Length: 162
Image (cartoon, rainbow, N blue to C red):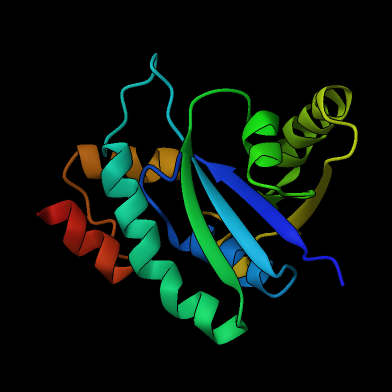
């Protein structure tokens, strides 16, 4: 049987409970999940790529074990479809919080289909408990000294405070 490999891209700056929700459910769909940490030269992230990779690795280990799914993490700085294909993925996993995400993601699906026709996209709706969480808002709250403990895993909070 062919191994089902999924690619879940994002900046994960920081890894939020919303991301963890999607990772957990994606692990139930694929044999191997590659989490692609996007690194873009023109953006100035809150956390260095190496820190984001470390956070993801620490948080996803138990999730992967619980699903008997292999999880790998890779950085990428080019087109997402190129990174997904390089990882061996046939499926791109995208989380949807609301209709704004849906509209944007549908546009991306159309563009990606022209660039990589054999790559399929699977949308996973965010669970109600985390649907409101946005990494952008988490960064803004953290940047103003606010409490982000309700929005990120405890280990992520610890690593961010170091």
